[in-house]
Image 1 (tube, rainbow, N blue to C red):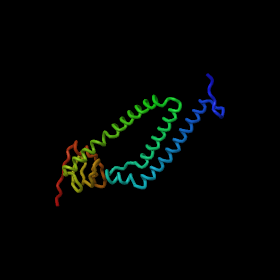
Image 2: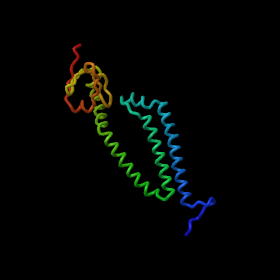
Image 3: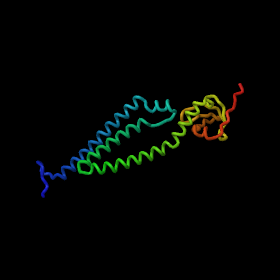
Image 4: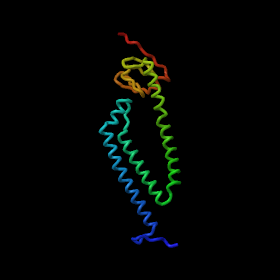
Length: 181
C-alpha cells in the first residue's frame, strides 16, 4: 500500500522524523531554561550554605539540582520522541529499569560511608563525652576537639587541623584526657 502524502507532499515517515526532531530540540531548550531557573533559585536561597551550616558538609547541591532537573526534562523529551515512532512503551520499561539499577548502585556506593558516620554522629551527640574543648587521643592522633558535626569531628593537633570521620571514633579506642584547670 503506498504511503499517504500530507498536504505538503511529505510521507508519514518524514513527517514523524520531523516531529521527533522538534520534540528533542524543544526538550533541550526547555531543559536548559528550567535548569538555569532552578540554579538561580537555589543560589538565591543559598542552598549550599544552608547544607554546609546544617551538616557541616560542603555539597554542590545548587549545580546538582539544576543538572538533575535538566536531565529529567531531556529524558522525558526523548521518551516522547520515541513514542512518536512507536518505541515508547518497551524502551521506557528498559530505560527505567536501567536507571533504577544505576541509581541504586550509586546510592549504595555513595552512602556506604555516609550512613555509618551519621549514626556515629548521633551516638557521639547522645553520649556527650566528645565535645568542643575536650582533649583526646585516637589512632596516635592527639589534639583538642574544635567541633563535632554529624559526619566528622575536627581536631586541632599542634598547628594542624584534622578531620576524623565519626565512625572511626566509635570503632577505635579513644582516650579522653582531663583538662588540668
